[in-house]
Amino acid sequence: VYPLAARTQHLRRWGQPSTVAPLACCSRLGSMAAPQSAKAGEPAGARRFLAEVAPPLDGSSHKGQGGRIGILGGSADYTGAPFYAGLSSLRAGAELVYVLTAQEAALPLKTYSPELMVTPVYSGEGEAENIAKAVEDKLERLHALVVGNGLGRQPTVMEGALRSIESACAAGVPVVVDADGVQAVITRLSAVQGRPSVVLTPNIMEFRRLCDAAGVDRAVVEGPRQKAVEALSSKLGGTTVLLKGPEDMVAASGQRLSGSCGVEGAPRRSGGLGDILAGMIGTLLGWLRPGADGIGESGWHAADAALVGCLLTRSSCRSAFARRKRAMTAPDVMEHIGEVFEELCPASKKAKTGDT
Image (tube, rainbow, N blue to C red):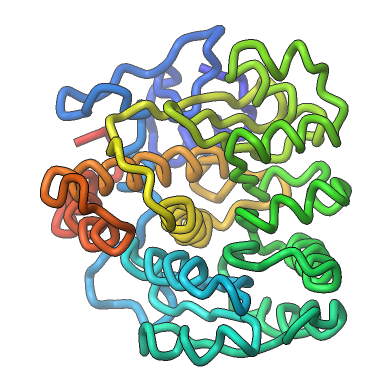
């Protein structure tokens, strides 16, 4: 297992022997054995993570305690992305989702779903200060923030997104940075430098641009993917990096935290799947509530939340493709989130220990 000091706190809390490992395992030291019910490529410990981090459905909570997630994104051209991120966050278990978006995207988003609370905070090129203030005003009630889905690349909007990320980190709110948010970060890496509770979710092209901006050696970038992800996280001072691909790779704190998710997904690559992933990771981070070191009170790390988000997304894609085949699109995938979550973490039985 990887040598994470805070993991000792987790083991003490649940009274488990020291051989139990978190799911994002360092490849140099091996990994925890997967449960018999686990599918090939499933991150070891994923079911345990959900059993310990997902809030119990026992009827004792109040509205919003199960997760209040913010989405900063949307533009005149891209209204679907923040919708997919927001609704998938709800389908994964969040209870309230606030979408802060462009004036041009607000009305379409409101018509897509009455469950999303949509507020227009910028228009056209936008004003960075207004965007940052709108997010800052919401931070006190948020458990996590997702930035970048359909954001667009207007310079002032991107600046507002960067300021929002910085404000969220200062307030102790974990952040998922996806799509155009990643492009914004490329222009100012300091916004996420040394922030393990920030999860960057680049595709391969965005990943290469991030590596170039961070000064990762090109030979490393073109070498084994896992090593490249570890190198980028190290250059960023431990920021959590999730590289999406045929096998999703995650690293945080350099080589100390490293893992992958290769469970079967779907051969279809329709638009919106990355937004679904970002939304679900947002919910998981909101439940985890990691500190500045990326570690939640339960002892799990933001990297673990990222890997479980990959598992949920891939499994939902697999289920949707089995039914819809070539016609599968993002809405079909969202329809399967609930059944996939139930398979991994039954609502009626949430054990505190073990993968069951």
